[in-house]
Length: 203
Image (tube, rainbow, N blue to C red; front, top):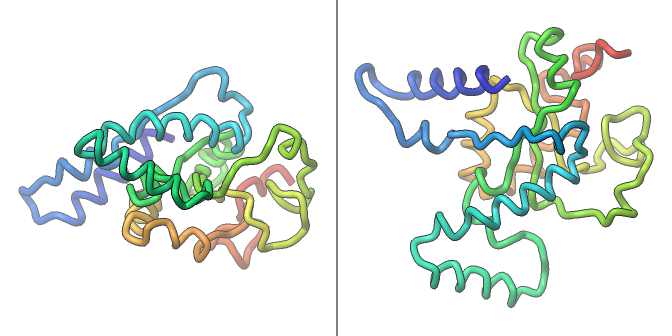
């Protein structure tokens, strides 16, 4: 799966540049940080988001120009007296979106022409341990209701769309999430054909 994403990044850069030129900064911008510790086996989106919160908090001091700048950002966020969006909201897709892979994603390598990963929105919010103990509606891959519009904080994304998706979110400061969101297993490519949506082979 990782190899497919990296190949897509390279092809996207090659298509966007004249022959003989390189955009090494784009490669750096799409340099994936991989966390594949055993604790993530069977992890829920909520547990992945918990880990992502910690990683972002560690990274912010490394991407601002001075400690004073970071302090101003944190103080400004604190003055708003609300948790969301977090102080990382204006730092682009890298610090607001995370990819994760579960069994269905791995199985999609064998069952879909374009395999999928899950893309998670950091600013969705958090659930308490008690709130996370919910029964998923059988018609969907996450969420408690049968409402098509219920936002569960993640959705499926074709591996082939990784670069274009992150580029779009980077320029719209995350507002695009609510415009593009489709409750899983729906995907825009297969919106009118449920027989091709992720996990169809399990039915």
